[in-house]
Image 1 (cartoon, rainbow, N blue to C red):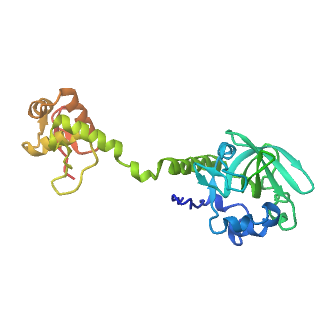
Image 2: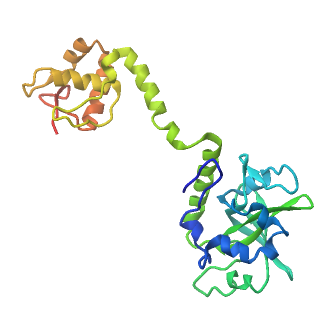
Image 3: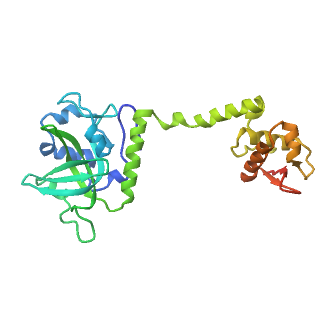
Length: 289
């Protein structure tokens, strides 16, 4: 998925399925614009069409500054939306088929208009091996959020049954990821923040040099480790290299660290393969690699 703060984001391989070949989703929308949107709406949003994964709750709570404005989710305009829900009811009229859909966060009506151009997108003749749009099945809908007489519905361009139920969980995760992106920012800005804060706090307890990157004697970086583990490792590396290593009590006296803290650090180093036990479980030596 690709997102940015100008509301430009693209769907993934799941969103590219379901009768959307031959020019793509936007081209299909344009070909059916007469039955799906009001006059002039295509020109109003030309050049800034987006496709956003959402939940029904987000659609029901979307804000619309005024009747002619686009709806907003997380203060970001939405044009095309995609969501997955279970079909609770199907109502057929002469001009459209209305599906009442529920995704666990809310229910909304999805209207798919009937005309000759749309016939190829209907799943009424999908064959015995493929699920059909019937009550009880899960389906993915692509369309535009609309409001009529203070009641919201989605004008669907495409709606198809779900065949791989992993897609349901995938969609909810994708909708969550996009929501967090626009409300909290890119995930990159949070990487390492909690670890760095904890590292600085623990480093102040054991001296300024506790945070130095531990390196093996051959110059290779060691696995990531806590500041306490780094101090124990450095003590072992700088100690006598006689094959026997150092006992926990020696490390406690040398480093001035509590006995349980040294044991915990040793367990961490043993776990990531940086040291090994020698004559007993509390005597350790550096494992060169």
